Image 1 (tube, rainbow, N blue to C red):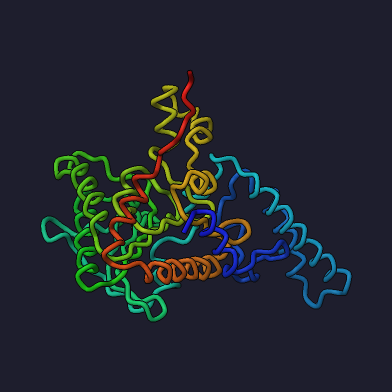
Image 2 (image 1 turned 180 degrees about the horizontal axis):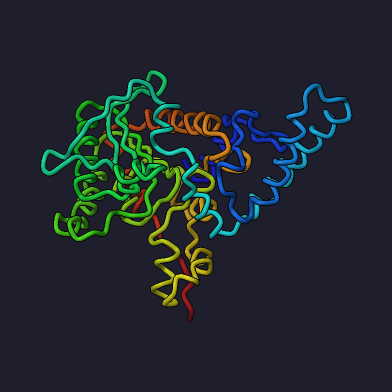
Length: 352
């Protein structure tokens, strides 16, 4: 299926995100619990006004009408702002700790998750979670990067930055899935692989490169989704698949905008310029043929309604699995190889 067709087909089944939609009151974020991003402040100001009106007991008809109009205005303003985000703003959204993370999706989408630990060599890297799971009645092998939200979780999961043992663990579980003829689902959310001395000593670059080769050879369907940050080789180490999707406000890049700015302009203050040059947003990557689908987020971003985002993502995963069921097993690895070999190709007219 072409990228355009894949994206169009997703719109047929997805939960509608019309302009009047706002999350239910108990699903809307409390502005005092999350520091809004700069471009979100006009929306938050209106939401605070809405909260005051909704708090009035037994409101008269004129207040009910004001509430309705304010909800419509919030939806309109949110749509206008989020339809014209700068790539640097997309990065801020992708990094927002209030976005649903891998463990949130495991709880909301999958059943009977049985975690599998360790790489049979060194230790269990908690930056990558692996295990058997069910999505509806489909048994799958799940592999996902987890960042954590508070200091304790981030320390446990190393901010989603995997060591080489994390990539070895992921590959071993994927090879186990191929043995049992189970499809594989991977969630990507990392700023990059861990660059520490210990990770380099234990073969970080080799572990990622080995995963790239071996994932290309795994004879079972692989569905990959970038749910937040898709940072360089750290993301690619679990992202060689037959169907690649991205959440609307995720990003997927060879380098962070700060890193790019530091190399090209010798200062991270030029990160906004680098973000525009890198073309790493979901819209850019769909146009370039790097991904197959953009998964729409709830109005205002995934952090505003975890449950709604999870249901939209679940429908995308089920669609992708159904599409890949029809691909003969003896063709799946060749199709995967061809898919990645085509990336980056371009044509130019010869000059005489």
